[in-house]
Image (cartoon, rainbow, N blue to C red; front, side, top):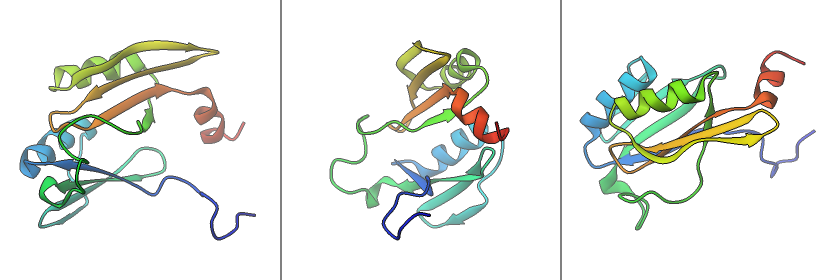
Length: 135
């Protein structure tokens, strides 16, 4: 049982974009859906098997140093075909941050910088599949 301060799971990932309309269009194409929630200066999608939330915030509200250059942690989204997902993100206008890399024991990663300066990672992760399938 988790205590009140235990990390229990990823709740919302926020990215920043100076052109929120362009970010809405780009991520709608990437996720193949429109945002489920919109407010002035903010849009939000629910993505994947667990409907994780990804929010895009107008960069004018970013903390100093948080927008404009790739930095920080990379959240990897599980995909079944890393090379295919990576190539699709490049075709949609992403820039390679890290090419498809085999990490060993069946783990494969890649990442791109979206047109707004955020890092988007994709990964094949066998542990994710075992949780999803209850193995």
